[in-house]
Structures are given as structure tokens and as C-alpha cells.
Length: 609
Image (tube, rainbow, N blue to C red; front, side, top):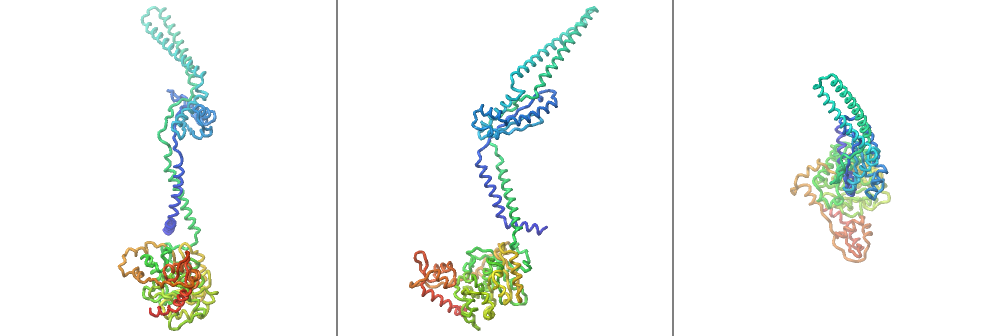
């Protein structure tokens, strides 16, 4: 459970930028559209259906009937007869459909109250429309607003008032007669008074019966009566307080989608990941360490002064793990390869070479990638002649001293044997006996020989070289190299006899607190960073004179470097050239002199060292 949670946290840490973007973009879009909407105002009018709430003894059946009628009126208020009458009455410039979309009505069933709400951009218009709807609904209702019914109700009420007056008079006469009985002495008078009292009581009873019948008639039709309880007033602030809620919902939905997308990408992703160094093996190979991720402007050793402590410590850790991978067995020759193109094997070779050289050991870097060499550009040196000439027989392999093709890199104890001119068949050169002779000569001169080869899955060169070196390191790129490619490269390399596959090294790893811890210390002038600053130097050549010239592209091809590298050399003065009409030109004589000096002067520099 702890491991699964850690993986989830790693996914969130790796895709934090996607989660932020996924939350911000929907929120910004929602805010943009909500801010473009005009302010809306809402007015409310409340009507009561029936008169049961006004009765001292309301009938529950009548209340249920009134609630049912209220539901019907809530639907009726949005119908065409009501809305068109209001449009004509107020002179509104809108259609029935437009007005109906502004109306919302619902019923409070326990109180038989009908609420009509009207929304409009004009607060006064919202109030007028709401009141007009209520009045028009009352006017068109069958139990309200009819003249005949009003007259009937007034007549019944008048009759009820008259009956109440008559009943009170008769009751007063009966009380008077009852009081007079005590003064009478004659039996005939008493009998006559009692007869009159009985007659008056019969009249009162008749009046009461008539009153009850009229009262029932008056209240029986009141269930379908509409009356305004609370008229609409002009609203003073707009509605739309849900803007924050809309933004929160949009941001939350975007965040959820981004999180789902991140986990889906991770589920479908088959590339290798560093995971903070917690992984111990990859494709059944031990993980030796990691190379830090660096920007392009810091990827050449002329820019090594910009390296940070954490980066240097990560490279040191990789170097140490490589040498400790074979305890008791020396590693004189090390091959660095990768499964595919772009994994960073050449950059790893350059880093390892420098970190070993600063310890005092003499290191020779061999660029055996004769198909697409890059080491000479990293160290900012030409590629006039190199390994291809030695293996092809164009150059003689010396027995006592290293070949003249070995070039200084500007770093003490670190030398480079570039690839040379691209041969027609690099693999054929690597299977020749001259390869072993070259390696033996370099091993006599250097403590460690590090070889850069083409990717293992691209050409057979890596498998050939792996069988003649003491150890092989497989470089993989964080988030780029496929797991299947690593397994295929591992199977291909180990299929040959004598291959010692030391392990894998990650490249382009973003350093975490493990290595960043060492960056807390200050450089006192004697640390690794200061030593690197003192070791890295530039090689400058004198400025040229002007004679017969060649183009910059021809000069770059003659020197075995890229046009971009040749252009930089022209700006620095290392390549004798002058500029005319936005183009660089190199004198042919100076170019040949430079090539001659490069071929003949390397041994002297090495020998002096």
C-alpha cells in the first residue's frame, strides 16, 4: 500500500504542470465567459390560491384542491395567452418565447402560495413584468376578476349581513319576553307570552338555517380565487453570486480531467523512469547511477564552470558505482552505449572522462561512433583524422607512444581519439585485428579508456566492441527510452561471448534532494568546481591573411566538423576566416596549414604533457 501511494505521488510530482494548467485554463475560460454576460436582476411576486387560509376553520380538502390549482397556474403563467397579454400591455419588444424564458414559477404546497420570478437585465422591467403577469393571471382566472361573480358575492354578503341583523333583533325580543314573564300573574298572559317566545325562536332558527346556506354558498366558490400576497419590488442588486462557484467547479473539473489524463499517460507509458533512485534494477541489470538533466548551453566542457555541486556529485556517484561493480577486477576499457539514438551516451562518456581525469588518472576517450560522431564537438576540437584512419590502415599504430590522432581536450589527463572520416563500412573496421592493437596501445598510455559506440539496436558496432572491452554500461534516457528497447539491447549485448554488462545509467534525470544536499556547502577555492574552472581552457589560433578562399561549408567538411561549429570557430578566431556579404570565407592555404598542424602537432602536445 505504501509503494502504491508513493507511485501515485510520483505521478503527481511528475505531472504537476499538467494539473496546474488543467485547473487554470477552464477557470480562465469560465471567468471570461461569465464576465461577458450582462448583469441580471430578478423580481418576485407572490400570489395566494383560494381563501382557506383566511378561514377560522379551514377545510383540508379545499386546501388540497387549492394546491392542485396552484400547480396549474404555475404552468399557465408561461403560456402564450398570458405572456402576449403582458407584452401588449407593457409594450415589450420581445417574442412570447423570449419572455417565457425569463419566467420561473413554483408552488409552496403547504401554504398554497404561488411564486413568480422574472429575470431581466433591467431591474425596473423585471418588477413591472412580474406584477403584470400576476395581474393578468388573476384577470384571466375563472374564479377571479369576473363582474358577475363579484356581484353575486356582494349580494350574498349583503344577505348575510341582513340575516345577522334580523337574528340579533329576534334574540333581543326573546330576551325581553323572558324578562317580562316574572311580572305576569295571569295564566292566560303567561301562556300567550310563552307562545310568542316559541314563535320567535322558530323565526331565529329559520334565519340561522338561511344564514348557514348563504355562508356555504359564499365560501364554496372561494377555492379558485387568486390574490396578490406580496407584489414585486424593484431589485437593487444583480443575481449571479454563483460566479465563484462556477469558477470552482470549472477548475475542479479541469483538475480531475488532467489528473485522469496523467494517470492514463502513466498507464500507457512504457518508458523508463528514475523514481528518485529507489529502483535497484532495470531489465534485470543493476542501476549504476544517473546523469543530471542539463540545458544545451551547458552541455559542452567549455561551459563546465556553470556546473553545480549537485550535478558534479551525481556524476561522481555514477563513476564510483561503475568501478565498484567489478570488485577485484580492473576496468581498463569501458564501453558506453545505449539502446537507441538520443539517449545521451556521448554526453555520459564526456562526463565520466572528466570526473575520472580530475582524480589524477589519465583517460582517453575513443569516439567509435563512426556513423554520427559528436565527442569532438563537445570538446570543441576538429575531426580531421582518428579511429577510422587507424583501423583502416591510413595511419600507423605506434608501439611505444599513442598515435598522433590523439588530441588534447584542454583538460589535464583527458585526451580524445575522434572517429575520423566516416568510412563506408564501420562494422568491417571494428572486426579487424587492428582494433585490438589500437586498444592495447591506448591502454599502455592511459589508465582508463572509455569508448563511445553507436546505439546497440541501430548497428552491430556496440555488440562487437562489447566483446573486446572489460565492461559495458548501457545508458537510458529518463522518460524517453522504451522498456522493450532496453530489454532488446540487453539481450543483444549479452548474446555474445565475453560481454560484461555492468549495468544501466540513467540520463536527463532531474536531481532531487539526494544530490542537492551537497550544494549547501560553499566553494573555498579548492573544491571540485574550482578545479574544473582551472582545468577547462580554450585553444585559439592566430587571425588569417587573405588569399584564395573556400566557403565555410567546404572548410567544415575538410576539418570534419559541423557548419555551426565552424561558424563559431570563425567568430572566436580559431579558424582563419573573414566575412563578406554575410558569409564566412576561409583562405585555402590557411585551411591546409591548419589541417597539417592538427595532424602533426598532437603528439608533441601529448608528449610534453
